[in-house]
Length: 287
Image 1 (tube, rainbow, N blue to C red):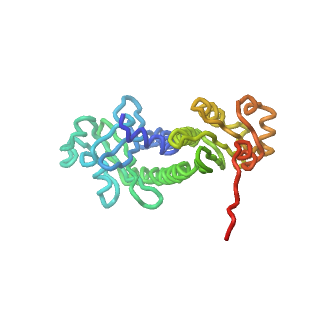
Image 2 (image 1 turned 45 degrees about the vertical axis):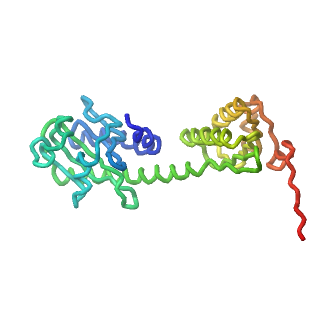
Image 3 (image 1 turned 180 degrees about the vertical axis):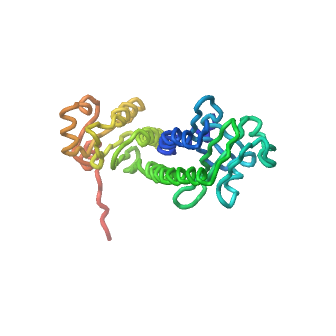
């Protein structure tokens, strides 16, 4: 499985999950065995998610050089689609190596774009039997691609937010502050852990002040990422100081006792955290 697939699968989590839910309906409506979504990379097309009703024809992570793909023909087509009764008998597709590898005949694919109109990849279906796709079939698959376009945009927005959502503020040498805002999901939690630990190691951090004043708790579940983070930092020899405990967090802590079990100092605000460390701001006189 390619590294490109591993990266994309984490970045486009919602697209993969949504497409999997649509594939069964698409397969039934078009009477095909296989449906899949690809992403166009720098020089290859990679299958992000796939559905194979009986036997696996297209596995997830399957990657083909761009010039050797059906996807290239779809994207280059002025109608942004390609349909073939039999790939093995078509003058162009029968020459592609992938045709003999897959052993399929009927094929229909449409271009998948994001909401800005940029090509993301393709949405395709195929079958080992000949398939005569009509115009309504093409329009149906294009409508499914339009739905997925919104999910692509959602994932891209979410990824960009996650990329910027580990705000580490350097205070001074050996001291840094992590200020958390909003909801922490599984993907963001992993990024927080990786980013903070990497920062702590590369910057010789001694103290990490974790500010939870902007954290939102959904369904009464406190994100365990902070418990794992504190324990991981302690193993690295970095002391954590917790601040910004809101009334909602305090009520939750009273019921769960999760934070009380951690070997961590808790203070009211950033100023108190700095005083605990022994850090003092000195005003420079002006002349």
